[in-house]
Image 1 (cartoon, one colour):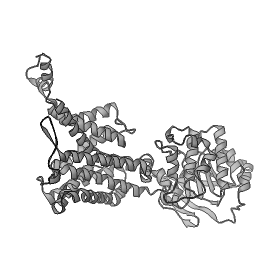
Image 2: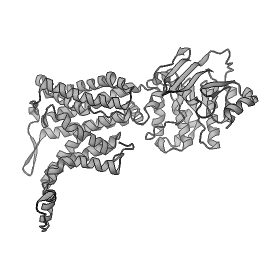
Image 3: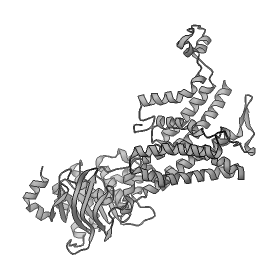
Image 4: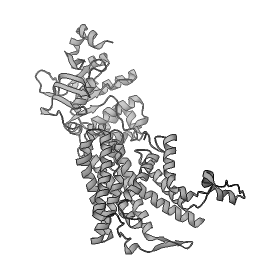
Length: 317
Length: 248
């Protein structure tokens, strides 16, 4: 049991930090520009594929740096020449624009790399067990992912709270017009945030690519969870996104490893009152691991009903 | 302190205008809010725009800043600025204090003031020490989030924040609205101090007494037009204008 708790906690925190790498950009972009970027997870996928492609020529480490820079650059261009023009026509066209962009990116990725997973591997230098807990090997690469995401989290926090650009971003979260009327080039700041936000999603893609599966459907798999994180944390709240990322990371990881059902709990308590057959019987025997994938969405629904502003947000989703 | 004594004698007729607005139109959707507004503000002058709610006084300021798309001519220091982006207008030396104050609520007083400074520029007319001498309260609350200040403190903060950017003309929208008489006096004193340093002030004000006392010249607006232009003495003498366009 202790083994399960330790390994699941590590995995859950890791998954949560990966989610945060993406959710942070998404929530900052939403707060400043009012755009819920449906294509955000697509930039994560682009990060993974660019990382893979670059690593084929130069090795993993160049890809780790270059892919996010390239993807961030693409993100900045999308903001400058796409979103900024669409912005004049209001929020619905913006939403549709990012929606369409997500499909375009997915199709392009399929055309270039195909539908099957590509062979994106953990670099040899990190391909060893870091430590062993109760007979389970914990891969060094996962620790590396954890270190990278925590380091980026700290760097992001430092930039936002300790630098002048960070101050301008914080102010623009609530009053972008006023910030502009004090003489700050807010459109440029928007482009920067969009570029850095999509670049961070790409970092998540590069480091997750080898550990998970680098495949053209990876954006579609992760996108919905990302929105759950941002809404549960509170749209526009960075600390909320952080809390929700960890929460969902841990909940999902623990749920998967818990092979427990109502029936098994009752049985352990010495009660054998399972209804036989029917819907109730199914509910009785379904394990938490089986309903694991639904839990984040249940959480989303509950949060939207009980606290529409999210855990730490102050505006309605 | 008396602003009038420290101020260079500016005659609006001869001095080159700092801000010239000619035939300014602005729309909110389909409603034609400004229907050809013209006025001017000379360097170092205090000018007020009066009028009832909804006649377009605030829209005039927003159109000058570029926050509402303007049509017509706006010249600042002789250069056309109509249609420029708000941050460019601000960098040219136009400061704006909106009616809703727009304090950054989660940022401290210090951070709010720091955001007023323009990036890469230092050494303007106003230092933190000046601000704190005028409003010791802001120094006491320097590390307090702007959102928890009282209404009067927020009004001081928003004016001081704009001053940190060292504007040559500051446009202040309804600074005394909802303030205690004591605070109103402080704001009036502040406006005098601003003008004394050679900064022109364009004031949108509801309280006639304050506008008459502070301003060198006044404009009265009605239904998107300027319906009166003149000195405080002329407005005091013109009961017809006051009755038709100002008194409720």
